[in-house]
Image: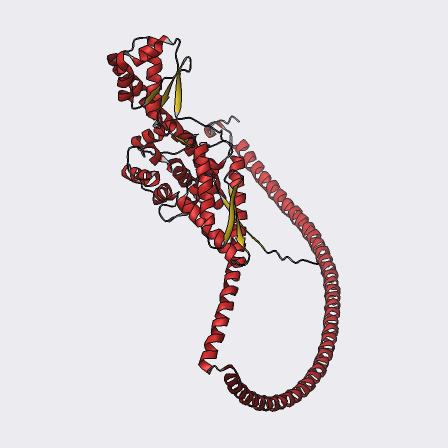
Length: 535
């Protein structure tokens, strides 16, 4: 609002202005008083309403509290009633249990009283029995004394009647008892041995049959004579050469016998060393095919074939070791095993026999819970001595064991199996017996081996001769192609126990003195004949 300066306003208007301001102030003051009164009235109303609400809240709370208190009192009364019921039930059960326990105690007391009464009666009976036993012992002592006096009297009378002193009679009685005891001991020993052998034979048969069934190897049979085919008969003369110089030089270089006969188209090479036989036969075949036959050419061809055969036998040894899964062999051992490819035993190829024995040893060792790798290694190397027994003195088991030891074989089980599979040295490990059994199984298979008629007849005669040398033997017959010998004894000179002794003795001598493939069974027969004539 625009106001003019005071110097330009008149005095009357100034007075009016002062009056208006005072009135305005009065109005404002009155308004303030009225507002304050109004506010007080509103506050009083609100206070009254709050008081009413507070009174209602207090009344409601009081009612709820009373209701809650009544509910709590009812719940407390209910729980007290339930607790009282539970306590009453427990008290009832406890009283029942107490009554039952008292009843059991009463019954037990009755039982104990009865047992005590029985024990009292038993003690009385035992006292009576002890008294009776004492009386019986006294009577027995008296009877024993009486018998001793009677026996002394009888001994004196018997000594007078027999004319023997007490010491002599005792010696005679002891001799009779000793003879009877010896017979009983022999029969008992034979029974125990028979039972043990039967059980062992049955278990061994099961293991061996299992090994044979699980291994199916081929049968091979070789000859010591090898034939070389020639295209024409005129080559026989060229092989012989002028005044026989070619054939003599050939036999000298190869170490074999060349057999030239009337058989058309064939020249035979004979030698027990199969390596030399193979070298000679292949060399002769090359010379015959080439047509140039003279000493210089013979030397050249034989040297070439010998090198080829050497490579082949090393390869054969390596292949056999891989097939048998035998590792870590010395190269010289592998070479000697390869030489067995050209060696036969009763017509059976020894290298194939060694592989077969290795597999059989593994199968048998597996059934017995032994180390299959050691058994396989021992079976594979058991005949390595046969590769050099033409060149070294001694039997092939000892030769093979010494050779294997010198060329890195450290296993005592393997060495003992090599040296002892024919019983030349004592067996120290079960692997030796396993190799022996597997060797016999491999050699005894039908078709695996063969022998000449002369050797066959000689073996039968030797077998019968060993049996006939036993005291009390009447007859002996080799049957089943020499696989069994039947021995007939005199029933008056040999009893049953003696028959078993004869059978064991014949078997022992056959093992010690004879060489044979497979197994020979000894059967002793004792027959008692009673004859009478009726007229």
